[in-house]
Length: 407
Image 1 (cartoon, rainbow, N blue to C red):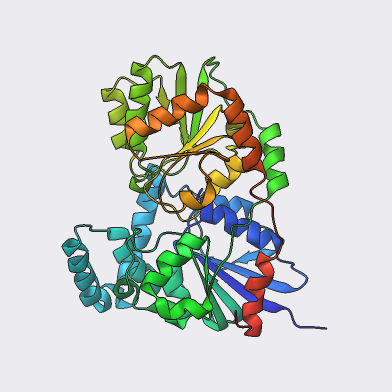
Image 2: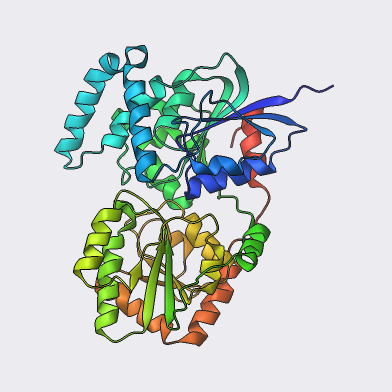
């Protein structure tokens, strides 16, 4: 009998987010008849573990299915960070590195504690006495460091999901770990370009790997779920994403204030959670938008909300390739996006959506234009639904890494 090849995937957490959704779909498509599939979650936490295919073995000896974004979940994550810092003397060993990187960040005017701690989480992670045919780091930071330094594998591949420099990564921070990989997969052309600006010598082994989505499953879930239940009769705007600085929801709140001042009968909903929730809730209260800008949190099935919304808005500072935008396109929604990296590759202005500057005035103007033109929304929605055909070739390119095939 032919030996099954062993594949390991490593990700930082398994919470509700785009990369995690794409990873689970990738794992679902890999045949258990051909491969032994393993997953290691570096921080050992996240509610999406409930969706892990049964043929994938979770290697974590302890795992917490709590949300990584809830208040209690964050406390548990902090405890794991502290344990990693004292494990194997990690804190003392990494002190010079962390001090040097913190100083470099301060010189750039942007201290990012989470980026500093990824090295500690990697070095403090579990170890497994196994050799894999292919080890895949599915996210930047800790997962990438871990696979590069602590996994025994014949071949290694890394995924890059973000605009590398804008997300706060540098060669010094990651100690040039991408040079240890046999292949680097960027989720879009813009992500690839940004990555190669930092690692030009990786050009021969870097290619684009588009996110895999269950198109039929998304459409079925949109039909079977409940969606909005508040009885609101005006126009509905929807955004889906973590409440983080990258997503710039404070600008969307200001845009909602302008819409209200201009007499628009519209309500804006944001599905997601994150470290900016309290700041955003205070901004909403201060501007008197408690009934106009609603943040109900993350939901297991956002697709009925997408299908029922009149307009999907994704106004962020930067993106890699947004899964939320892809999902809204699959459901045939007209989309307004900010003109930034990632978004430019996903929406063609005037064809399947509109693009605007990241200012309250431009976002407000784009929303009014689309909400007052139902024919344009319908035309954009039809074009959007045609963008995300699954070529079925992505997985083959990943598996080819095991055979040492060059690009």
